[in-house]
Image 1 (cartoon, rainbow, N blue to C red):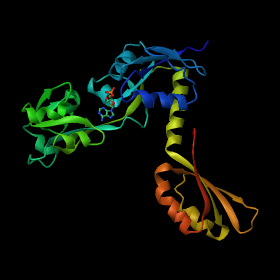
Image 2: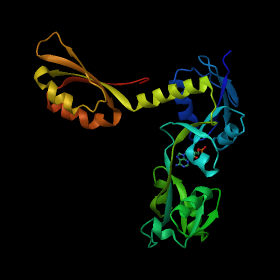
Image 3: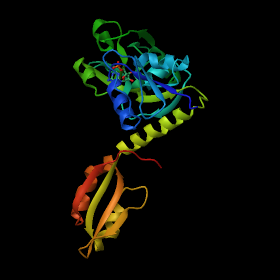
Image 4: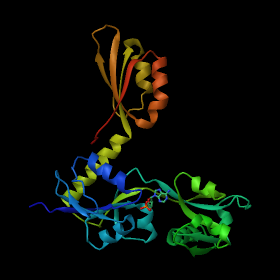
Length: 284
Ligand code: AMP
């Protein structure tokens, strides 16, 4: 009999919705939980779901309450949990930045030496300072880190930033990045769980597909060589004859990030009927 897999998902906060969307996109068909329901299951897979706070997910995995879970890498590393990062999920991107008030003379991370730094990530901050042979006093705060310099509690901060607008609003300027985070799937070492391997593969296929677009266009056959050179495809594009002679149809999988610059270049070489389509899933 297949052993069921238990997966912990963030019950609230900014990682909740993208985690759920990723799971839905993977095709395991999670049963939507009702209001305040903390447990549910997947209709297409032997997976049970448990909703807990993102900060608690690493603890639940470590203690064997669940087999695996989705959380932020910062939360795993800050408390030094001994778990496997099975997959980077491509959302929840943020970085721990060191920042000082705009009027401060500091120009780079080395200027943190001798400073008093407020942070809600004391472990990551201390580890980074030690690795860079900097001496600084780390003051632990649990929230509103950005106002610590204005309150006279510290003269610098190390805090999570995704857009930088909170830093700007609080008159702070970044000295640089101390740690980069995103949402991750974590599990225990040597778990040897077939459903966990399948889930990891399925999620990876969705993440890969999200970063790709299926590109279709027609091109005069004489331009084919030049256009094929332009395409940032890993494999070879598909080329098909069209009923109208002299034209061929080209189909290729390209990185989503390349589409913006690629389309005008293709147009300039005579491409017509250009289409880009999302890709649902990709397995190598
Ligand atoms: P939440 O439950 O909303 O507090 O989510 C916290 C987690 O979301 C953090 O531990 C990070 O992994 C991630 N995250 C992504 N962007 C940010 C951000 N701008 N500030 C704080 N956490 C962020």
